[in-house]
Amino acid sequence: MTQRKIEITSPTFVDANQLPPQYDLNLLFPSAQPLALEIGCGVGDFMLQRATQQPQTNFIAIDIYNKGCYKTCNRIDDSTLTNVRVMRMEARYLLSQFGCADMLDAIYINCPDPWPKKRHRSRRLVNDTFLTQILYYLKPQGDLYFITDVENYAQQVAELLAVAPGFINQLPTEYTHHLDGYPLSKYMRRFLVQGLPIFFQHYRRRDDFRLEQSMLPATQMGFRNRHTLESR
Image (tube, rainbow, N blue to C red; front, side, top):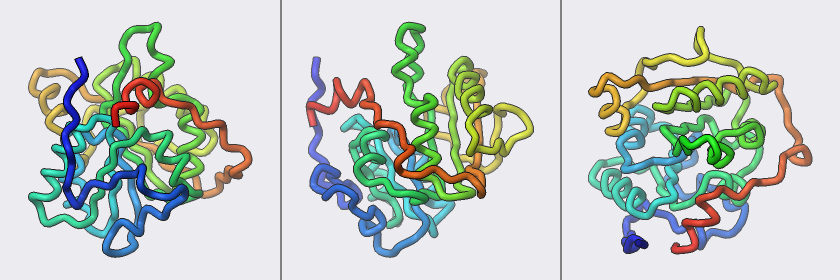
């Protein structure tokens, strides 16, 4: 059954469909600052904490679900934060429409859909094509954080990053179960209370890595972008 779409009137929410292609996303904020992207903001737990920790960074928080965007906006609006904007948009589409080289200081991917059935794993967001795209949009020394509660997803991403030429692991191991200072969402805390592990990965783009725009792989249309967002 299709869920009722909630109208979002929050000043924090941006209808990306109303923006022209290649729009400078920093123009959405009161002042130009380093820009970071959270992919899959859920109900806004992580974003509220991270934006509070880093007031000198502008954050774009995206999710494909209307209800999650609505709840995230409510959390931000109830705070005094002015450095967050929320969009209902799929990550690959956002980057293809508004991305430019070296635009992001950090990308956060928190507990994305793991598509646990083996036959569905090709639908996972993080694959070699997406990691190549990220390298283009991240600044030199820009940070990539990938967090999941699914071990085989963590292992898959670790294997991909190990051979990606532009990333350097910032941890002594492939992943860790605790990352100092990293905000925990309600979803993460629920797993930890149950004694279940969370897998944290932190990589950084190499200073000397360069990827020309002509070498960018074709943007893949996400499964949920094809099958969910028609109801915008």
